Length: 294
Image (cartoon, rainbow, N blue to C red; front, side, top):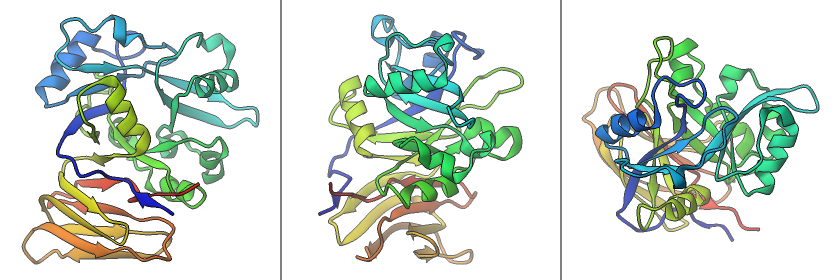
């Protein structure tokens, strides 16, 4: 049987899973990134420079937040489809010269958490999003939203959820922080973890015990398998989102703001998640509420 995804714990840690530094095409050094993001209330960042495997565990002295390892790959697969993929984890032997298919196989062999990056901006088809069994997809990419309004990956998430109901949804910055890419702190994840450590955070990310946000806050997410209750910052809408046209909602454009909602989970929905939207139109999303069995 499917089991509830979120745990009853109070610890939430703010982080970003897609960041670029001067090690590739970013404008800020690791120290500048750590200082800036820590000042914005972040607890951790993932180093995801293009084709540069991270070794954060050996270079963390004096940083005001926790760095996790990662990498971003880009290139064409064997069928001629172009991808950007963020992989979370520590990797060895990854070089651009090996090509995208070999690198993707190598990070998979090294237990990387594979996230399809900004598929709307890249121009991926839904079939391409489903092709390689990515564990997650960027449902909001702040830089792509700023560049040309193509930072929304929700439709791709639903296409992937139709085949794999446990697929993870990530909001991120994809920060470069250069004059032509100035945006940061526009999309992030909040991870449930027992402690602020690389091991605990990666366990929470892999398990989907996080939510993604562009502003609103989930103070509490409680699911017993039959219903879900959320407590939030003041928002205009709280929605239970299911497959195709299925959904439920609370709130309106005229009434006062909401801070709590409870929904019964329809037993015939293969997946469901909660979306909240504040008065400024900024949104946040849980992951799917139940972990599929098998």
